Length: 427
Image (cartoon, rainbow, N blue to C red):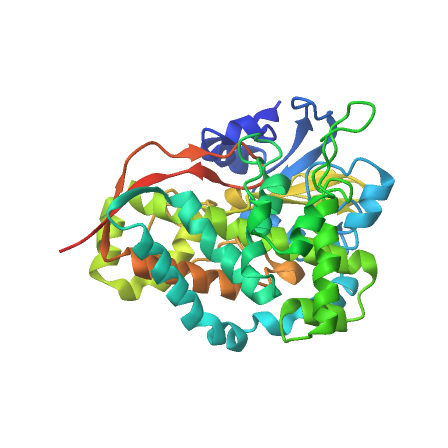
């Protein structure tokens, strides 16, 4: 019962908002099974949380619902060793460990630091949109360049190697969708350290016994960690003010360093890679709101917030209960897996009047697309800056769909694989 909420194939045809609506009304905290999916084995099941207030309660209460005990993905790590490794990631830490790791890199994401990048980001967005005018383009691929380019700039990754960030994110996020998980990097165009690191890429995605290797495990990402250490060696020789240099100066253990690189390389670009195309598709599906925004571009900041509410790039996150505690109408026991559904919370009728209506002037807009509590997204300000830059450049042009959008099969990322469009300058 309710297994469709878990199954990645469900999301290939759209987020099940109607199911979420019914569950918010009648079963706001419900048990969901984890059946086997292809080669991936079945899991123990979890408690799914759908109401806005309950989602916020879980996210703000790390003493009751831990990010560290079982990490933050629905799927359990394959082995105790895999769990021990990913628990070193900032995303999978509870205070005070999470707070210590966050402080090391937080200065790079303050409003002041992001303002210093705004013109550079705007110029890049302008170049991207101009490059696609008067021709058909896959907007998913076009839009992906900006977050990857921005991340490479912040991390100090050489421009010729930035496509690796795209590929690593695809492998981690898209493992439930074979097309999405494919590699696209051209080693010939990369630095020697990148070509050397790529030699460590696993040649087989399975364990010796035939079980698939968890794409978030150390073994599955050996090439990424080899690159991280090679880049670190370069930064030690030539330190700068980028994120990598801050990480090296922050007293991180080897596991913490590898996981911090992992977090920025994947989460730092994947959310916008889906959020920007999702925002455009939402506008195209609501032409009156697109016309309204074009008529008054000063509405762009509130439009961005509504795009994030309506199309949350990340649909859910997992916690693990630390003790017996009530949640909704259920009693949660220690060790239970608890998954909060941001996508459902963002359509909660008690918080958002007429929640299925896309309204670019909606205020207040208390969406949880960037999370809540101690794990509120460190890069939220940077993400908003990039979204504004892209849509500011798009608004003067006519955008016409030239084919149907193709969704990602994922129970985590609210993603698109393809969005074919034609961009035409308006007279």
